[in-house]
Image (cartoon, rainbow, N blue to C red; front, top):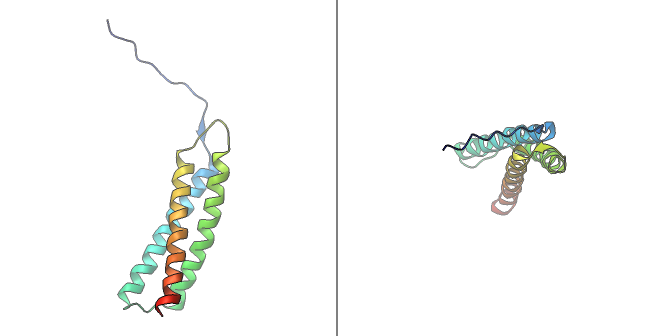
Length: 107
């Protein structure tokens, strides 16, 4: 005798803060990666605008990280995008600080 399929009915929804956090993380990681690639193609010479984009990405990722952490505290919400946003924004923060540190030390 076959077991009947079980369905999961829930009222959980995605958190808006979590989605914004993930989107900010994606924008930041794509922009930071492109600036690093463009600096590499320019023989390691970083133009002022590349540094400005990295600096703006730093603020985007800080805002995304805060939104991701706040969205994990919401009840009756799915937390997948919260954790994705937290991880992406933390990676961008590490990438930005590493790029700034290497820019100061290597020069």
